[in-house]
Length: 315
Ligand SMILES: [Cu+2]
Image 1 (tube, rainbow, N blue to C red):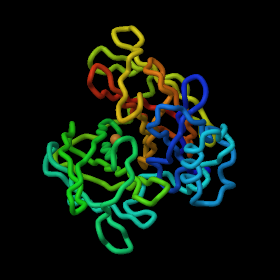
Image 2 (cartoon, rainbow, N blue to C red):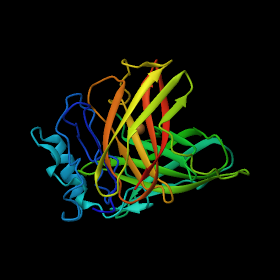
Image 3 (cartoon, protein in one colour):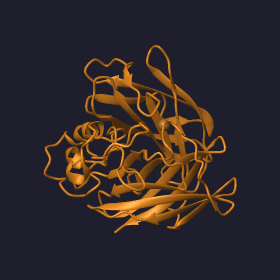
Image 4 (tube, rainbow, N blue to C red):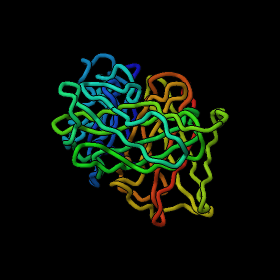
């Protein structure tokens, strides 16, 4: 849909690999790739076709398309179903994110929550594994300067918990990205989290084509986001000035990308699976609207998961 934030990742050279519509809310037509090392076909990287699809079909069609080898190219309007990007609602499609507490007394603490089925009120205890995990938890500050990608542990009663260490006090948003067992389409629920302490909201970092991160790494961004049409983003990883060609798979992919829209933190999670361990990781993304987005790329190298962030303006 026009409002859906759609990002597709594809193999550097040719075909993209998309397995599931993981990480995308109903409204998003977003598609993410599966962890399969073998590339499938690129899914609806094109911006065409959305808006004509019946609602509710996008994620599913995207996923199924991704699973069917031989599905070609851009024709599958996976984005169709989405009316709104994911991560904006605490409750969606019959599931609710129930945070045990919506504030943390300190920057170092524990996040506990339950995902409930609205129909019964009972905790959801059966999930599909996506990218090696039943659930991915993203925590981002409202000002988009802090970001964490966590993997909580689920107790037998369905309660999820994870320690969290945040860089500053402030307003955060928690995103639970998961696929209930039996559902074809993943969803992302979001809820606010306040972290006690005084803080000053930071302005959105300026756009920069290069992100420097500890360890001597530099990630360079080429390409951009465009509202309503596909744009290509390539992220190249360098260390000490030299291209990195031995990226390590992290949760089945060489790169994991989350895009958050400035202003409302609409969420999109994408995993490229081109099987190429660097230096370039390419995504195709369609922004749901004009505006600023913050991109967070997780990659693993030298045994550690590292995150590079970029501000991108879709216009
Ligand atoms: Cu994850």
